Length: 461
Image (cartoon, rainbow, N blue to C red; front, side, top):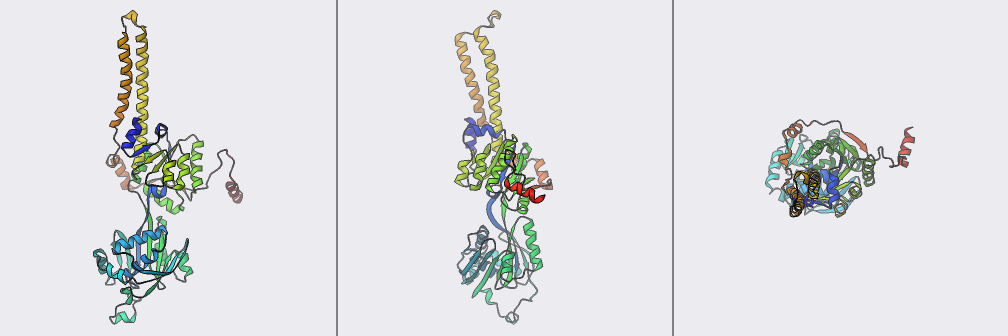
């Protein structure tokens, strides 16, 4: 009771005594990626611009209006970046919108002159525009995002610009045919991706980011890299869990490259990628069949079966209601260090219980014979009132010892950042990452191979 109360005061809601007791037995801990290890909100992390075809203000305005009609998480990230960078609302019109899942979108954008004009009133964007206005190429920063700007030396300039007539595109007047998507989508629309652009995309994808291209009026003018960033405390939390002797595992439905990139950032060496919700449950069951107590940490609906199956299921309160209901422990703060704190509290509570049991046993082993008169021949006699007081003192001492748990303080980030950790983080040394697919080595718990594994083995043979 005291342990669960202390947990609640520290933002850790424990549903009963059993999860609190089981937590100290955990030997393997599994993390979901999206929303648990990462923030769960994709954000633009890097941009490449071809600045001498269309002005950056027009590119961002047209791109933002086009993506505002899409419900994809990548589109949401791009729209957020455009709004924050231009400090204006998306007031343009989007017509003939066409979206193909897994490829991209195509539409006609118009009436963005108001957005372009408002963008010039933004101090940060105006400074950015002035830096590249003279045809400069290089690396710049806009709203915290690194932008690589390329100018082809005037080969795209039209005759009107050479005689001093400003491009209509600079004002955002007229209509723009906007195409946004991956390589396949660009090829379908007859656009050729240059080798240097393709290399930039490959570099981003190798780092676990999603790279999308933007073409305006038939020319590729931008590449945007969108990534779900890792929580700042994730690396420290994983380090602390390893120091506690736990086997830390990452589960994700993403591809292997993305999974490996995230695992490398947080220090996890065992990864299961392309995992379905049913695979997560099977992973938990497989470890449990080996006698290992498993803790699962997640936040989504797809994590709920695994949270319920695990010996200890921890859900992030900011996640879905289904996950919170299925879990045994709810972390009220969106902070992975609370996972470490929960396990520390469990170990502290169990140690206190064992200490109380040892004290009570020794107390009674000495007190009962003394009260029964076993030592009367030696002149040691316990009067009835003394026996009743001793009995009450036994209960009071155990309760008082338990209440000492209230003095427990959750370790802060500063406490956990030991010199050893700081040295490790500085050198960023990591063992080889073991990456597996969701179906790899999964068999039924009775040892009989599944239909999928039998098919795979027959193909290999």
